[in-house]
Length: 571
Image: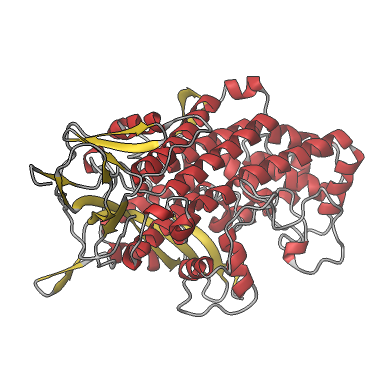
C-alpha cells in the first residue's frame, strides 16, 4: 500500500537507495516474487507507503520569500530513472492520441468532401448550397461558385471573424490540410438560423438527404464515426426532421453537430442560463462532484472514445475503488497529487478532441542486515493504465468498422503533421499492449497474484520504460490552452492551461513489508525518495484563444506559474 503526501517543493530532488543490480521481479507459480541480494521475497503480504511534498502552490520558502521554480519542457535528461511518474506516461499517450486523431481526420476528410459534393448536387435552394459551398472552400475544396457569392461570402467572413470558432488550435496547426479540416467542420457545427440571418437552410438539407437514401446512409455513417471517435452530440443532426417549433439552440439541428463531454455537461447544468460566480472554478467543482458521487465518469453504451479516455482518469479521484487499492494506503496529501494529475491529463485529453467538442455559452536479520527499499518502476496507477488500454481497443474497433483494410493499411499516425512511417493499426495495437503491460507491471510489483487469463505484456512495458528517453512522443512539447466555455457576461473564455513541468520528491516506504521466503536475515526497511514530475495546471479567464505555438511562446517568455497566468489573464 502506498501513501503519498505533500511537503516543500524542490527544484532538484535526489533519491536515497538505489536499485540493486541483482534485483528482479519474478513469479513462483502465481505468487509474485522479488529477488535481491541472494534472497527471495513473497510480495503477497506487501503493503507500501508513499509520502510526497507538502507544498502544492508551485513555490517554496527561501529566506522568508516565496520562490517559484522555472517550469520546463520534458527532455530525456529530465526523465527520472526510477519510479516513472504517470504524467510522463500520460505525455506518451497525449502524443499518440494527437497523431492518431490527426490521421483519422485526414482519413475521413476525403469521404466528407465527397459527401458535401453530393449534398450540393442534391440541392436546388440557394441558402443551403451557399452554406455547403463555404464549407467546401474552407476545407480546401473548390472556390465558392459565382452565383453563391452574395450569400456565401458574408457567411464566410462572419465565421472567420470569430477567432474562437475559426482559429485552428491543438494539432490542427500542424498542416494546411488539418487547419482546413478544422475550419470546414467548425463552420458546419454552426447554427445558421438565426445566427447568420438565414431562414431556409436545414429543412431543404434534410429533405435532400431523405430523398436520396444512399446519401443519407453516407451522412449517417460519418456521424456514427464521429460519435465514436469523440462522443455523442448535444444538438440534433439532419438524420431527423428539423423541429420548426424549437426555441432553444440545443434543440435546433446542426449539419455536423459538436459533441458533449462530462465537463461541459456539468457546467451547463450549473450555469447554462445563470450568472457564473466570480470565483467559480469548474475543475475544482467537477473534481468535488466526482469524489462525492454526484457526477459519474463511467461511459454509457453510447459513449465515444473521449468518455473512455476520461473514465481512465477516474481512479485518480477515486483511488480507493481502483484494483490496486488493497495494496495502497494513500495519504490525503498524495490524493491531492492525484487530483493535480487528473487536472492536467483531462486538459490534455480535451485538447486532442477540441475541434469536435462543444465550447458552450454559459452565464448566462542478525547474521546480516539487508537494507530493503521499496521498488516501483512506474507510478502505481494500474486502473488508469488498464482503462487507457480499453479506450485504445474501443477506437481500434471503431476504425475497423468504418474503414476498409486497404484504407487503414495505407494510413499512418501523424507526428507534427507528418506521417511517421508506421502502419496506423499496428501502432494502435502497440499502444494497447503497452498500456495493458503497464497495468500488469504495477499489479505485479504491488504484489497481486498473477492472472491466468489474457496475454502477458509486462515485459513490453518494462522494455519501453527502460528505453523511454528514446521515445520522441514522451518529450514532445505538451503545453497548451484549451477553452471550456464562454462567459457571456465577462465576454471571456474560461480556459484550462497546462504550462509545463516542475519537479519535487515523493518518498516510498513499507506500510506492510513483503515476507522473506528464503534465508533468515535481518531486514532493515528503508524509505526511498524519488524524483516526481508534475504538470502545472491552471483554470483562468482569457479574452482570446492562443494556438499551441502562441501559448508556448508566451510560456517561454514568462517562465513561472504566476507570470504565465498573469499574461494569459491580460490577453
